[in-house]
Image (cartoon, rainbow, N blue to C red; front, side, top):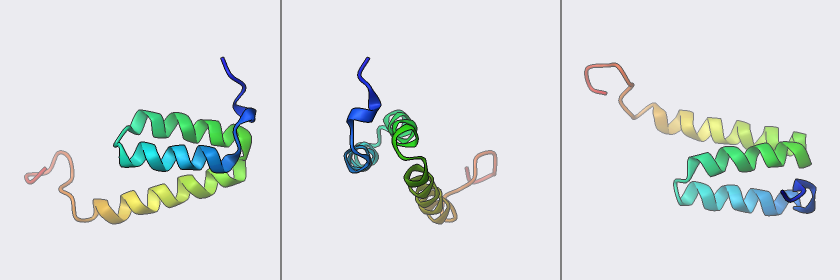
Length: 69
């Protein structure tokens, strides 16, 4: 297994962006864990931004378990 420290935080972030575009959410999670190993603060920022976007988009989506979802 490769050492995750061989990747720069920017490379991992680019991978996260690509995985999001591809809707490969398991890869997003894995890459976020890698980023947390390399740069925990930066991972926290990316995680917070991701949650904010999901929350903003989720307000328009029907909730699971409701009559419309």
